[in-house]
Amino acid sequence: MVRSILESRKLDDKSVEPNQDEFDISAFVSSIVKNYRTLAEKKKIEIIFEQGSPILTKADKLYLGRAIENLLSNAVKFSPQDKKVFVCLVSSSEAIELSIKDEGPGISKEDQLKLFQRFQTLTAQPTGGESSSGLGLFIVKTIVDKIGGNVRCESELGRGANFILRLPNIN
Image (tube, rainbow, N blue to C red; front, side, top):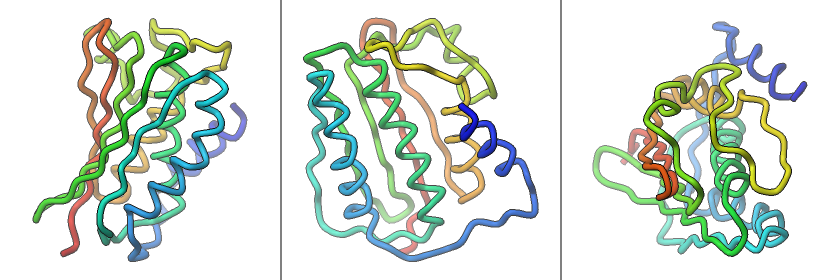
């Protein structure tokens, strides 16, 4: 939680500008998914990511990695045992979209109004005793805004949540 608070404060600093590195986001996401598979397996959750061809993007790798990790961590944290998390990366001429969809409890309409706000804990509870600071989605939104993208959530109660991170395509 301390790390999240410090990171939140750092992101608030308007003088901190993200680095713009060009890299293959498909390989980058694949390595993050690989790191989270061990955590997911402890809860008997399968993360499915079918890596496609390389997709080049230009963004701050450290910031983008933190945003993706927060979304993936939440998907695992709020999913019950024996469920799946689907990670999908698609590219069009205008944008790159990363979707992280879980089979958890979903997010109520009321809670969706609170998403991405600082220190907001929602109705759904972590399924494996994990903690929640209420900063993860705020950090995701702040990072994605800083690197020129956007993030949204599609969810219904009882039907899981799908977080979609959209970045401009450099090609």
